[in-house]
Amino acid sequence: MPITVRTGSALKALFGGEREIKAEGASVGELLESLKVRDRICDDAGKVRRHFNIHVNEGEDIRLLDGLDTLIKDGDTVTILSANAGGGEGVKE
Image 1 (cartoon, rainbow, N blue to C red):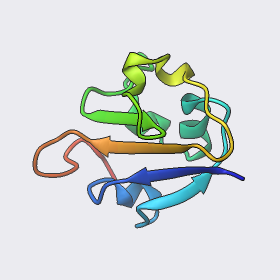
Image 2: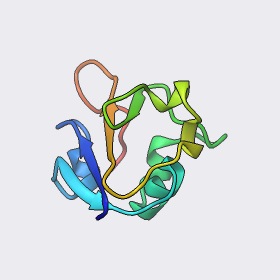
Image 3: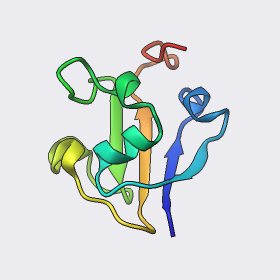
Image 4: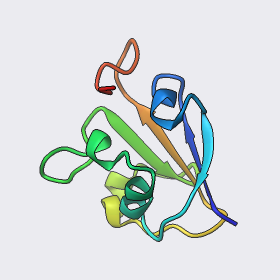
């Protein structure tokens, strides 16, 4: 069973217009790599950009866990949201 990735309407363009998709990865960083969105969500230093919030299983923000090294497994849900007011200004097409 793959990992469910959910996003808000501001970021659905990153996922082909879908707000929920399935993906694979052993960590949040691997998941972002498999989705080919890591470079859009992370800065040049490899950290999640401040205007993105990523949660695993509706729990705490990964910044309060192990960051991109936060482990995930089949059946988990990862939610990626834009913290920008007014939409996804931080997302470049």
